[in-house]
Amino acid sequence: VVPQEYKVGSRIITDIVGMQVEQLEANFLNIIARKSLKENIQKCVKNAGYEIADLLIAPLTLGDSVLSASEKRSGCALADIGADTTTISIYTNNILRKLIVLPIGANNVTNDIAQCLKIEVDEAEVLKNKYGRAWLEDYEKAISNTLEISRGKEITEGRLCEITEARYEEILKNIWAQIADDSEKLTSGIVFTGGGSQIAF
Image (cartoon, rainbow, N blue to C red):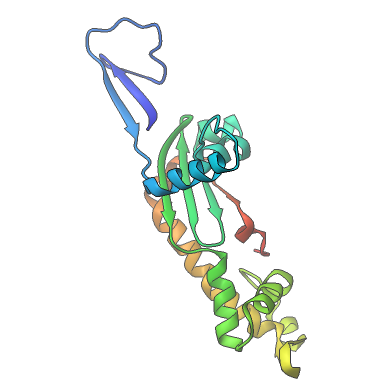
């Protein structure tokens, strides 16, 4: 449960510690996850002979370490493109307003390459990281650049980028669909992080 803001009379405040009030309204953001995730972590750590000091929610910790106080205050979306999921955190006025987890990530790009080119996933991952693009600026140059893949086959860099572009376009459109209603409040724009964001944009 993440506290957002409190209403005391007609005033909206973020910290009520030490205040005396007759009536108080509060807004909270409830973050829900499968209970088994927490239980499995606790069980593994206990079996290893250690104790857990605290369990932290990754998107909150990431927001604290990646975003500046200015970005959180002026309004910012943090998009963490991971392997299997993309997590979007929306901050305004130093408050986490929304947290959305989309079931799509960089592994979808790798699987697309493997299926389209009929190669192993490990090789597809190497191609993605070395030559993949979320947006290809010089298509003419890329289409003339030949890449060798397994079993003596060849493809052009342009063909590879067509595959990666298509899936990244889907990921970015899904991110935009989640933040579009709040876009005018996001003065600091969108910050991308996570392994999936390392591809060239």
